[in-house]
Length: 333
Image (tube, rainbow, N blue to C red; front, side, top):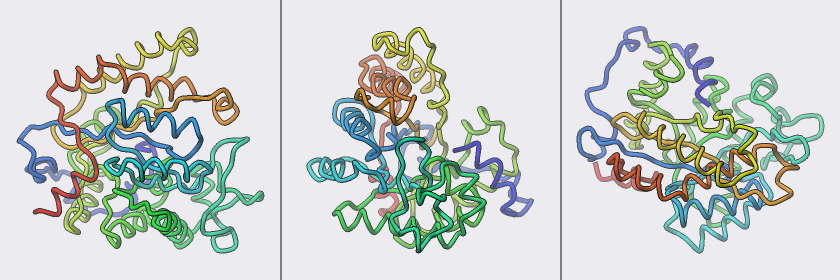
């Protein structure tokens, strides 16, 4: 998702004086955490996408270190995951706003209906497979209708989301898309995933220009002023870690590799609230017909279950949190 941000936000038109803006304190400090605290949301994407996705997410949340999850409402296995959430109301679960359908053999369409949002669908009636196609064909009005439909569907199932985030970063596809995403969060008083703080990870790993960082901070201020918590930073790089071919089918080696990568990633965290995104999945034999990302996703799950990773969190003094807790802290201010 950050790769999309750099292409889009630079055109939003934030005043030039914000480009060098510095923040006096982190959003973590504003929320009442100690000065210098490293606060972390360990977040699992793609719940509801498949049975394997559900099983991995559930295990990571109940037995592993993961603290948060988000659900793809247009997908087939949402009812099963909502049943899990009702049986485990302490779980921090948001909406993974789904505006694309990327796989070749396994597809889904908009909840709003293709007659209502024709720009969101391809010639087969499914959501477009990539963000670029959404940008070329869909209007911001259609995007807002579909995001609202997904929120309404969740609520009709008795699932009140703790936050909103974005599948494949689609809401960052254009400035107007992004405005609608933020609008829905503010209107419904639901936190939205947007790194609006110092963004040190983004600067270090993506080398964003100061103008983009200034723009992100202004958007963060807009959310904060609306009474919502804001992320200081975002770690969205684990999906890009290439699994060596010789360990992809060896769970022990895969566990060691991914756990080591996540422990190293913890060392890059800066003071503030960071969301670290992963895709914990326990691939059933048929998952390979959905995606070839099974080893990457299985590795995420194994790392979250690994005692060495849990120990590293303690050793590095990292405070785990959830979107629900951040919202509760913001409400008290």
